[in-house]
Image (cartoon, rainbow, N blue to C red; front, side, top):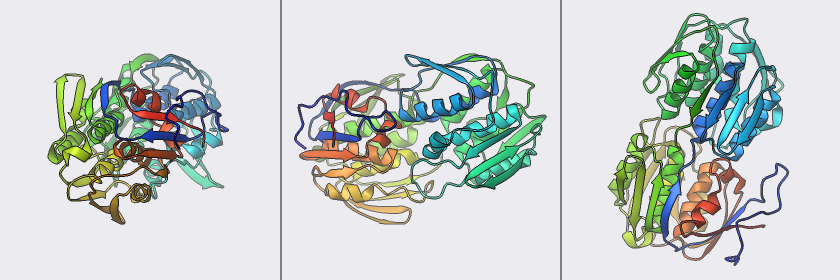
Length: 440
């Protein structure tokens, strides 16, 4: 694994045009400098789907160049939309809109299901493959389908496909059994062109839903209540196009904060969406991480790193927003694996989110899991190892651990990381990490 001189440049590609999936890291280097935070993956994908609601051009700014965005582009173009990219801007024009999505990108990425609501609202029907994505336990799309049925749609599931038809959706009251982010966004977008008023009760409250509301309203929709448990949508006859800037990525911000806390140094992150990171920042304060907010758009984390600082253990419960984010739970667990004492981590959002724990054990972590709960007994130091990322945020946990570990680590399966982190090696190398993309 000793490839410290290898560049993070071009490498042989896999079938999807992405580099062979391995990241080499030599731990122990402090991170010093500034990292520019990209646009939010979980917002950009939904706004791209929302652009299908109008035949007029939509321009989205601050869109990260990540694998999930590229797969969503495949879905949009497969439906007949024209998508062009210039820098961090996407121009989407859906003058002609088909009724069947391409199979492969939907199979690989769960967010592909978000085109269902917009296409049904505008075209009256869609045939879409059952979505895939990270293996985080059962995540049925029942809430999406129940909501569309309540709005008058006919739904059939056959041979791995979902068929939804409605001459025109009708506004109604929808009650979600669980505040599902995906279902809230899908039904909110579907309701924009529905006849009458739709009210979504027990709606998810994530900031990305507020971002979607701002974009939709800018295009002529009448949506209110995003960020609360009740969203009200007054249906309109049509939407116009528009230009909109995607919010900064709160999950990416938290990941780099935890990487800085683990490796030590003096790291600044901007533009940081501080207003929606309260749960993460509060927990970091609790365990003894040094951070501050020098201005409205910047977060700074500094210190000697997990090994020297001796962070305190904590009780972490991943919950729907505004609780601790489930997507930040894995890298936080990696940091707690080096705390001085025993931590308890549970995930109330996904039932199988601890798949990465076995790989942390290869690095010397002392973690025991039982269902949705992990007992994390802190060790003085982790050691480098050859490990594999099985999903996006589990891969982020391995990055955090490897940056603080003694020796070299090789993280395979890193294509998962490219789904959500743009130019990861380049940006970490720019602040002092010894990291490179390598061929296995």
